[in-house]
Image 1 (cartoon, helix red, strand yellow):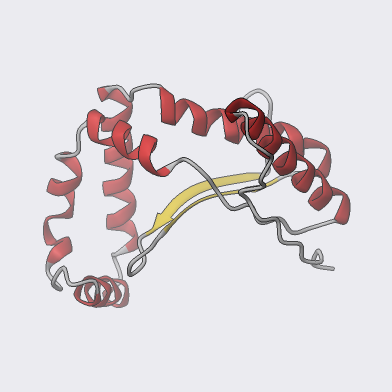
Image 2 (cartoon, helix red, strand yellow; image 1 turned 180 degrees about the horizontal axis):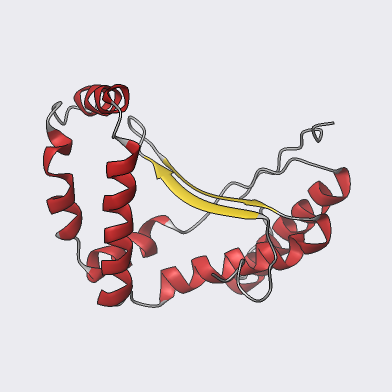
Length: 171
């Protein structure tokens, strides 16, 4: 909403998590023009800061839970997808039937649990950028400024906690 609404800053935005074996990842992926990069990154930072500092309410958590349940059901419609999910669950030590009561487990999550997890896990990040050099440079500048601001707030030397990788744009 923050990126797509009236401001129309991105062509595409998607957030998702992947629970890996031992470690996972939460990603926010955007596509935008180089001119919008500073505003997009500032907006993503603002949304993550709000998630860390403002408790989630029941309405927003319930809406998110229903979206998760529906998305999971759609993603696992095909037999191959269900087999893959069961294989991962078995690999993770959860048992191949773990997802049979997925909806019940998701519906049991409370706003307090979501708030606690946001405070614990949405603390630092890794930034990857690809595209035109001007866009990648804008991302790098934002990351460096964010690191310097965080260091100044803590009274410590600036350390860049995020890594910016560059890749050539597709032709």
